[in-house]
Amino acid sequence: MGYVNTEARTLTGRAAFPVLQPAETENYISSRASASLQAQRDVGLSLSEKFGEKNGRIHATVLSVSNAHLHGELYGDFLRARKQVFIDTKSWDLPQVEGMEFDQYDTPQSRSIVLHEYGEILAGIRILPTRARCGCYSYMLRDAQLGVIDTIPQHVLFEQAPVADNVWEATRLFISPNVPASRRTLIQSRLMLEMAAATVKEGATHVIGIVPYVFVRWLERLGLGALPIGPKITYGADTSQAAMIHVAAVGAIGVI
Image (tube, rainbow, N blue to C red; front, side, top):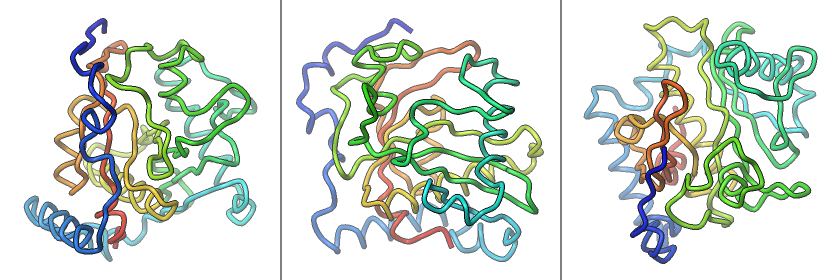
């Protein structure tokens, strides 16, 4: 938990984040898209084969303050599912009210991606632009690095937290404990690809966030290039690491 790569701290932003710059040409996007699809075929299934008619019962909704009223109780159910995972199961010390978990980053600037099936929440994740501001808060990793919040170590990143139109942050990733083990890989994969599509729609090429240590290699199997940008950090039994995820190619294709 105390490990810091001091050499990486001396790098410039471009050297520390070598794939941070947005794609310059359509040909680049096209080549990345082809590589992403090939990555899907390498594990035996293309995007359409993996998430097409066979799993058509699973719906993905991107919620915001402006559209939440169009989806009934979905946003409230999403926050209740977050409480079940992060407060009831993981025992995190987080704000809650009426059975719903929330924090200072749940603002009109954020989006919530929800996977649901027959009214049941399967999984979710929150995305927020790195240019977000609300009072003294910006986004979670940057605020941790600046010491604005103390729930994440300040050395979580090797380099200065990015603030850019093409970089969004992903937080509060969860899979419902009610999802059986036999479906969890499918749900995780679908959630990551929906996140890629949603952030690209917002103008992002990259997503920053804390992921389980083994996720970097797993994300590459989905065609989502991931670059570790922080030391391994242990929270209880979980070992995590900050990563920069390249979403432009896969997100531009869409999930299905």
